[in-house]
Amino acid sequence: MEQERERIGEVTRKTGETDIYVSLNIDGSGKADIATGIGFFDHMLNNFARHGLFDLTVQVKGDLYVDCHHTIEDTGIALGVAIRKALGDKAGIRRYGSALLPMDEALYMCAIDLSGRPYLVYEANLTAERVGTMDTEMVREFFYALSYSAGMNLHIREISGANNHHKIECMFKAFAKALDAATQTDERIQSVLSTKGTL
Image (cartoon, rainbow, N blue to C red; front, top):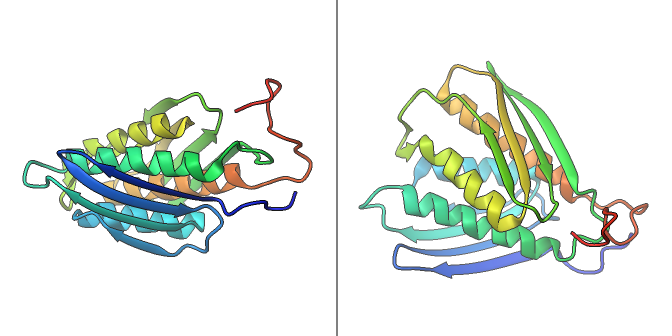
């Protein structure tokens, strides 16, 4: 199937808590321009772009004097909307993607269905309160916000791990690889991969 349009999603989201700009090119090469004000979160989004081969810009001004919650959650919402916009009607995409990804002692599974029906199953045993200035409880909140705004069925499961930095990075890389697989086009797929005729 020939690519009929650039698969780029652009989102501007401004609230009393955050001011966010996100641009995502599904068919990129892994370039990233990330500035959220949270160093470890920037590192994770850079990993997402690089390992998914997405071109990603994320610029965020958030109320970090409160804590990191609004910045991370709202970035998840904006990135999910950008994914949805970039994929359009999802014609020709494989829809499903999964990855079993190791990082040193950490091993995570991620599986995605771009079904249009949001659902998150998240099983991770994070034992530190924060990594850098990022609260570890916000990892789940990020993926929850993203999965619901993207209309994505997302499963993330820890198989093994000890170091919290490794676990979270492993999670983001597995998500990147699974999303890359799910968004690939297949010339055998006519319209969308659904008996309903729509996703």
